[in-house]
Length: 464
Ligand code: SF4
Image (cartoon, rainbow, N blue to C red; front, side, top):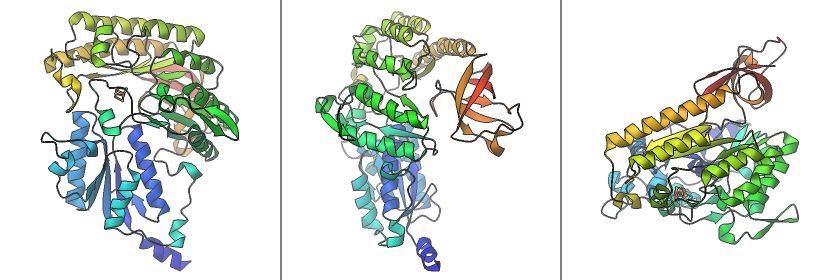
């Protein structure tokens, strides 16, 4: 026994910092799973680490700065740093690698989805410990690997890359074209996650509605039965799989293609959450064309209204860009009007900011920064009014809440989310202390609660 402890103490330790979006998080989880399987110890701090891995984000300029600062900090504190992720794939003005140019002393730089390259770089600097004890790392989620999220929810990435070329986005240049994971693999991972205690599965990709396009919706296999690599079949299978666990399935990054209409009845039937994260970015057809957005020719307002007819409880989350190059006051007013009519429940908005390497930088009509910011603020004022009004309509309703935090078994209350709230990006439900003394709240369990008020983006509820 003492021998095992000694060996654990001497395991090489790797500090790991994960920045960026949920897709970057799943890349981090793959690397951490591999490190752990090979016997490396991992930690979230640089302290006492033999080496540091920074998984970076390169999406907008603020994220680039945060990533470069973190690399600088890791170099100053530790000295041995491997960089991976979207920023690692970015080129500098002179065509060289941006990270290498800013921080020449990093050990290695890789792009996103590069578990093997990262592991090769780790092995080169810090040989893997060959230790049968350490190779047997307990793993709650089996084939699904280690997760960075709390144990009761998990992201599942169904594809990598993107076939679109939105003019403001550099993701395809960093992550490449769409590559869908085999549907059997996705379902196997989902099964392991539910079996490991996950109560909410969040489906992510760059374009969930495009799942399977690259493999022409090839037929895969799951549990010995054929199943098409396509969003509808995947969602149906995930929903059916979640039922016995009483778990939620939530869909992110869905574009408003006609094919999505087929998924709405599954929401109405309670198979998956009636929640759709649809990044619309704008409403005016000319702006959408300049953005080269997927489904830009679709009539989004009518489509959302039809979704609501099929499934009245559907919650729509979206993101928008205000002040895109050439946006006229009339086009912007169109966006405000769309927001009022579409009644988007949850909204995020960026003022347009040029991203190095994006095609939109060459579009004519760049607006002054103050005007872009002013439009963002005007848009958010409308969006927040819509959101608050919609939240208020929930007062008096009974909702099922997934508990995220409940100190002292929730005797003084806690925090949770309803089907209308995705983790990290939406509001929360503030749970009051239960009225019944015998009632407890536990993280990762569901409770019923009566909504008593709406405060900002959140709801306050009495659990029962
Ligand atoms: S759909 Fe557009 S914004 Fe989204 S990843 Fe693809 S190119 Fe980028």
